[in-house]
Length: 293
Image 1 (cartoon, rainbow, N blue to C red):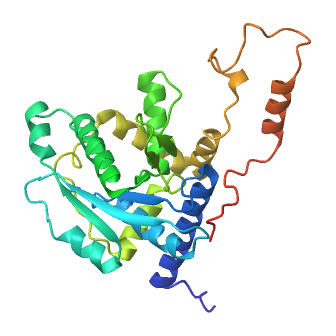
Image 2: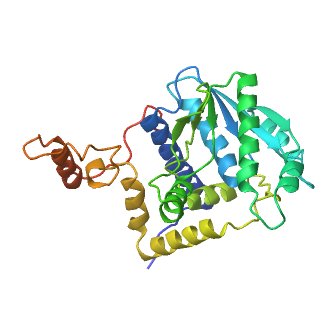
């Protein structure tokens, strides 16, 4: 028998890119992440996710029905050995406007956090303040972060197991001051796909020597659990992720979301009807998007 022709590496990369573009476009459309005239500050750490985010947003920008501006930003935290030339060269090669911000948060974190303790919390707070300040200086109204589907699921289970809350990462949120909107366009994208895309695109990955090598025991435990579940049944992760978009308040225990106290016989049935509809109807998590490719 003559073997079936298989896709070449370049064809596989194009198919992968098409899927990622569709998922990013759907997330943008589903949650109204980008609108006409927006200026989006894309935070690029040098990792696979943020470099992929920038590349995908640039491709969507070229074909989107709305006009928006992209500015790539890298925060150089003055970590020893950080290659200062890599990202500016990459930004210039891909033709994106960019800003490099140099702030010595590395020394602050090393001074404040005891050796062996996780630095992520303080580091992220410092980064957030600098990112928001830079966005205001550049006139950006949106800040795009590279968190993906797996980050959202891991955060959900971390809050469930260790925080006693039904809470994940929102795909879109407004900052406390109310002048900026943070978006996560990779919300529907799997980490494995982004890793394959980064390899195929040969992105100049820069590892984080401050916290990138640290293993948060709880997050690693959740990550391992999710990977094991996906090996057992690949549909399970998709189902859990879909559930995050189909909450039924009357079947939970949060009295702030549903008025259990005033519920009485004969007092309507709208919630029950909604519950039946959600349970009976097929779930289509991805809705049509104005940025769909």
